[in-house]
Length: 481
Image (tube, rainbow, N blue to C red; front, side, top):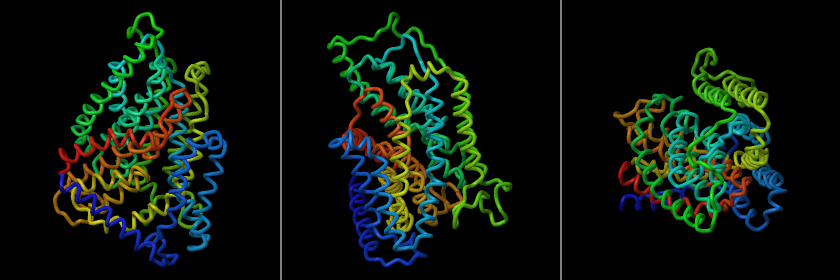
């Protein structure tokens, strides 16, 4: 425990020194990534503050003016960046972010949102503590095989519907985000993008199954906590006279739109192809660069990304064409959730670029050499930044330590325990905030649309810090020290 506290203090000190160095630097255009000044992170912080505060103080205004806030903070980053490094550099940075990061992100989310909206469960299965524990466990294990986004979009509506008779149910969605939208994705590269990036750099596909004991350990702890939360809320609902509208509890479940599972599988295949095609010779030039459509400067829309997007969009189109509209009406399907995520995250992706540049340039200087340090550094930064580049920064850092024993990757030899710590940090701690992982905000939006009053940004932090951080401390003591 003393080592953990010492590390936290050291990390804060190093980050502070990094900030001072960044503020004092006078970078040239060619060295923008290496010496990005810290003040360029202000728009990112400003946008996060808007997301956290404005829904509390000006909810109606915020709902109507989200696009304006995104444009404002994006320009507040892009204009100073263009003045400092030149318009071509600013254009290239923005296009790189939108084409190679945001485009595939939002197309994947859109496809899964559409397909899952065409699947509905009905019958006599009503939400109760035991049933909810079973559904959370099922969704968590499913996440590694169809992705955290896929499992979240597939499972959230049925869980909301089964608990529709209850008044106290926000905790169900919160634990859903903890487990299904994040932790469950740790067992395969399909589960979460950071592990896919590791697979593309030499980590064996099934290596992450080694994380199963850690996942099961966390599932037992969180499901135990959830059961007691849910039982208390369940008894209060029953005492208030609320009862599920069923005749034979727990005896019959029907699925409509089940053929859409084929389209979910198509989307999963598209994600797998996006990670495997770039390494094939037919998709590389003589220098080993991935082939694609040149856009601007060094920005290229790769052919594997195009193939991924086409498969996903075709899947979404076929899902709508082959599914009766009554299923979507039964699911209360609207475009509000995907619209909100698309608008807010384009601003997040653009304004987070300086923070990612600083992390990439200074990650190796943090002096992080122990597994528990990798777990917390990767995890805490993944809570607010894109967990994929954060994972790659610390995987690269671990590979550059010059160690001779461990997992041999394209980035160097990484000790197995350290690789486990980096992987768990990137996947698990995405649950710490609404923006820590792609499905988190989407699940929140769907829950809000269905009448569940979800916590604010800061309210969610109270839940995650109160429940998850103690669990992560236990993880550290048991697995990473």
